[in-house]
Image (cartoon, rainbow, N blue to C red; front, side):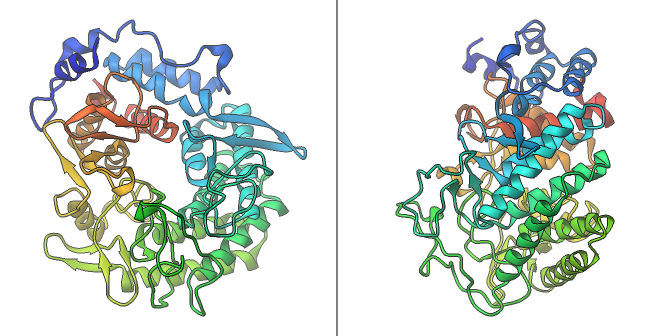
Length: 471
């Protein structure tokens, strides 16, 4: 079936996105897009069982086909698991970029945590990610992406910052240090295993805490600066590489967003929320490990940042009322928007940072899913959030559909998100970084493992709790 024919037959006739049942039949016997078994990087018996269950019980054959392609994509193609210094070690690439982002690697393996009790091999793979991440943090806590080979020089080695060998990119993003904490905590909660949380791990936690404190910038700008020779302003920082000024408030500066785009105002509110919940969760784990002093220090910082968010990160918007700002500078200047990448304002409940019933979050949700958000795009085909990263207007990120669905309590909205995902993969069976709101066949990144795996997470959650939405 040609892409154009597929898109036409998908029946995108109304805002409700009715999908023609005749299209489903074309996927009954469609072969998987997974690599042959012998060429898969990693195989989990528990994940394979989940795929079999989903395929057997979900009547929508196109969704079943997409789930089979996407959910194991991280394991099939991006995981390199071994041992290092006698401990599990797992290097995880993003897909079409051969580097390990702390954010992406955490998010890519996150959906498998619910299966690790059933599959010790899978559990060891995730433990290896935790070990590798803390190795990366100790190499450079300000870097966002790393190589497996710690002697390798980066293609970005000419960036004006303190580049080290083994570092792929050195964009300081709060979430880069939050994601390993989140993964560690939930690994422990799902397995009960504390073996990865040795002195090496604790040293990484202390570095993360110290880095957060330095980037509160109470007594100066700190050591981090970054500039790149580029014609893309979102890829570099102003003011000699330190970013625009802030007034110390207790919030933590993030010079780049989860999209790897530069912030306008360095107090990035979604990432500060993420820091609060990550610090609290890690403190709980540290108490179990009898590290009360370090746990107390993490809780103290979490409390300070949380209070600062509520003092400086809430604004009155003329359309939505009281909402969480996207970025602030502590001097009253505010950037009201949202970006599709997680952490985002939309995804805050997914991270456990706020409750879905929080009235300020609900107002914020109303704002970010409206034309008042400069990066919200809508067409006859779909509606969703993008961001400046791709560099073109009107490019929707499917990640925003997934974040919306994962944080919704409305079955109609959840189904709407699933139908948009089904209608915009352009016949490929995979989820992309972004696509043109008027033409899903115009997309970026055909191999983007995070998007594939979190799509599988969304479908699996729906299968567990609202299976009728998949019919």
